[in-house]
Every structure is written in C-alpha cells, then in structure tokens.
Length: 315
Image 1 (tube, rainbow, N blue to C red):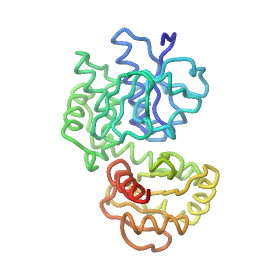
Image 2 (cartoon, rainbow, N blue to C red):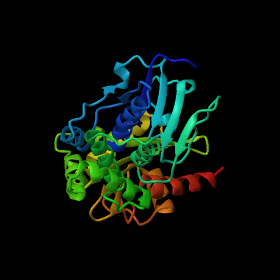
Image 3 (cartoon, rainbow, N blue to C red):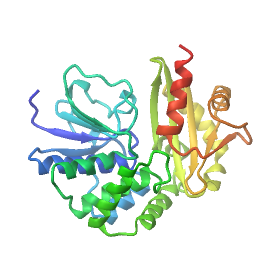
C-alpha cells in the first residue's frame, strides 16, 4: 500500500519507553531516507516530561489531533488492540517493534516485525541504530537511555537483560550522564501525584489485556519511590476502580502501586472478584484493602504471564 505519510505511534497512556521509542524510531527512519513522524496517544507523565526537557526534545503531537487513519503506521512498544491509538486501522500497520508478549495482533499481509524479550523497546531501537550503522544524536540517545533506565527500573526489573545494559552503556557514551541519578530524578517526578485526580493516577499507566479471547482485564500500574503517600488514598482508588471497570466494561481491574526502592507491589483491591483473583494467582491476604506481594515489580513478566496461565486453565 502506497502512503504519503508514515507515523510511529506508541501505546495508550504512554510511558517514557513508548514516547522515546516513537521519537527514536522515526529519527532512524529519517536517517534511512524514509519520512516518518512520531505521535503520542495521550499526555506524557511528569517523568517523561522531565526527560524531554533535559534533552531538549519536542513533545510529539497527540494522535487524535492528527489526521492519520489513511497513513501508514508503525507500532512501537505494543501490539494488542486494546492499547492502540483511537482510529488506528490495523490494515495500515507497516511495522511493529515491541518487547511485550504477542497478543491478538494478526496481519493480512507480511509486515516487518521485531520483537525481543528485553527490558525496553528502546533497547531494540538502539540495536537497530547499530545494525544500520548510525550513531544517534545526543538528544535521541538521551531519550532512549531514559526509557531503558525507567523500563528496567534502573536494571532491577526481572525483565532486564545484558542487551539492555549494553545498549544503555553505549548510549551513555554519547550522553555522558550519571545514569542512576537521572533515573531517580525521573521516578521522583513521576511519583508526584499531589495535583492528580485518582482517575488520572490509575489510568496513567493502564493497559487492557484480552485473555482466552473473552476475559477483559485492565491493569493499571503506578511506580513510585515511596508507596506511603499513594497508599493513603486507597479509599479514593477503590471508588474509582469500580467506576472505571464499569465504564470500560472490564471483567477485572487490577490497580498496582509498585515501590521501586523496596521492590514490592501493592494490589489495591476494588472488589470481591479482584480479591479472589489476586489471592489465588499471586500471593498474600488482604489487609486494609491491599494485598502486598514482595518482589513483584514487572507487569510484563510477573503479572501478565500468571494471569494468562490462570485464564487459559478456565477455557
């Protein structure tokens, strides 16, 4: 299919990796002689905004403000339909770059797909820069580095691989910053919810998954360097969880506060179904409307796979 325009788009409720991957891959396409424009699906979080400002990168336009349905699309950092930009037409997807499980995506024609079990989509794009023989400019390298550091939780996530570490080191040869200090600054900014409504906190890093073709599960994650403050708003979260679940017609909604420093997950329980599911699939008993799971920090590797196995057994 011939197209006049090509857009690179990450998932709904974009995190730093989704934004950085769109920016970096569009830049790589340009270096290879293909005009491409990065887009975002929603406003960026405070941590991503900090990275954009630090490296002097312009925030991409919002997808719903651009007439892109007839254009070619490259999906980065996602592949499942529940996470696509509104108005996206599957038949117009030209490429897919991701590091998550392959969900319900299918294609009527062959397309370029690059999926690797690494900690960040930006890791894969950094590899592609090397494979094509390009060195990214500092601002592009800085965004990819920010994404790798945050998606791997400063290399503490179980999704972290040696490839992530190697690409981060290579990018930092260009950027030359204190990686841990930069990552901590992003997480600190992202942890500030003082001016955010509870609905925004739940929805900011929210993904919808379809298990065994019929079970719809929403999983919202909030990563913080100190879980005490968000946990004080548990009653507010519970009320909003019920409302979002009904609005989106979900079978389950899991909202999880992850303490990056303590390496613990706090499942905020919004209803009896969620309590039964979390106690059965994960760990612990409910206390003060939360279930604490030590060592659980990754949605991709520690939350989605057990849920997939659980629901597959119910078919």
